[in-house]
Image (tube, rainbow, N blue to C red; front, side, top):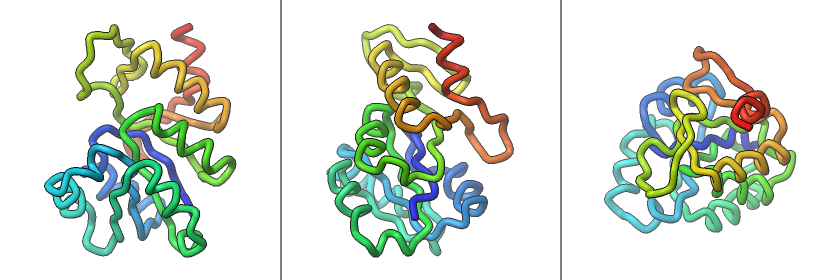
Length: 165
């Protein structure tokens, strides 16, 4: 069962490892990121950041989709983490109505681009293209929300998008 799709460019870190895994009673993390999947040092680091009792897999986005389509995945409580809204849309299209929640944590603050970025929330800076992807994600999953940790304020993405248009 896919408990959550989370957009977080930091992938696995303290908020995910210590709070989300416990709150959602996870037993698996799937990182869906082409760059991380091709970097052995980053893969090792991400696995070290995850709690030892949480099964952690790092795949390309397409590899994660294939992995999650395996019937064995339905027997686990999983969080899928991807660094970009664009990749989240690809995952959402592959799994319509299968994510219990879609959560935006941190996005766009670490990536460097010449494109203008818009401050969406304190933790999220998105380009015009990424905002279009966020609209698409909200169409696929209307209850998409922004929230760093389970105890932080939850902001519905649909409401946030209305404020920036």
